Image 1 (cartoon, rainbow, N blue to C red):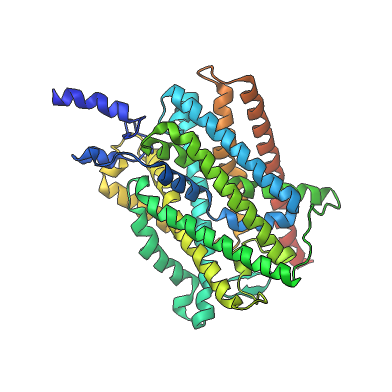
Image 2: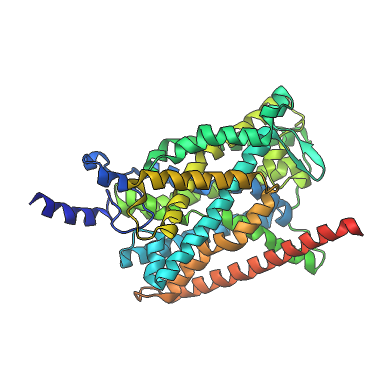
Length: 462
């Protein structure tokens, strides 16, 4: 009698507050299947879900956004940030709507429902490419902040170099190795995404610290009259400069990618009907932070804004305690990224396991497989962070390929496929617009990047 009453409860919880993995999907609480005290976890709170989703969104992308302002100008740049937030909300809403109708508990499940096995595999590959690229960028930024970076022949000293000088233990490789072993590895061992709610809250607070200090410095310099009027519109002089504007679109797309964690957070919510409010609250919070950071970051540094704006915080700001504020800004955001790492790593590991071992038992119930996949992925990311020197290159690569598929093309394809006949005419028109915009913009971005690369390689020989 006990066994008979237990099975239907598991199926019910897979879409409700206490949700359990009921199919081989990249969605957590398999740990709870092993635990006899299953009811100890009563579901995630609304606040915790907002923090986790906001942390998924606000990562390294925020540091590349001031550079997009330099390319687009303030007016078009801010408009694009807000526009992309609305597009992201629309794509997530459609994804959740088809998940409910198809009773799918993961993004991969929705893709599998619409396009079969190959649709699910396509999504898993895109999550792997996107998340590996994003996590490599996180490590690059941490290395830039702590050990320094060189841009256009100018070296920007890291925090450790400024405090102690250049030593072997302040080198990028050693600093990233220590960070990986002391921070990333322990946090990556957590098997439930809700366990990261406190680190997510702290990461959001650290991002706000960065923003508040940046705003404060900018206001002081505006009062002093040491900041010139920024460019409001893009500087377009010919067809090439016009096409170059589209190269910032992948950066904007990457900045809002959170789709791969929406189902995981939804499945852990105490009240799953709150997921739409969680998404909207997170996007509102993150778009506000993005606009403020882009605006004041570009105001502060103008045309001298680097691809990674954190690298700008190593020069004399011309205000009292400027050096101290520089260090606080850089260290706070480096710490923020350290805490973002595990929440992006979480779906990466589960999708890798689903791709390699689609018929094996759930990952969290196999400690050996869990450890091997975790160590392998962290090692891959560590090696990648030491061979991709520019954050801009990394973001344009991931944004122009996998991120666009995850954020816009796949949700649009699911809606246009409309297997359950629930899509409206308005939905389909919006999906066509999203697909055309994504494909066109990223085709131009890839062409522009390739052209710039060839031109750069050819110039020394001239």
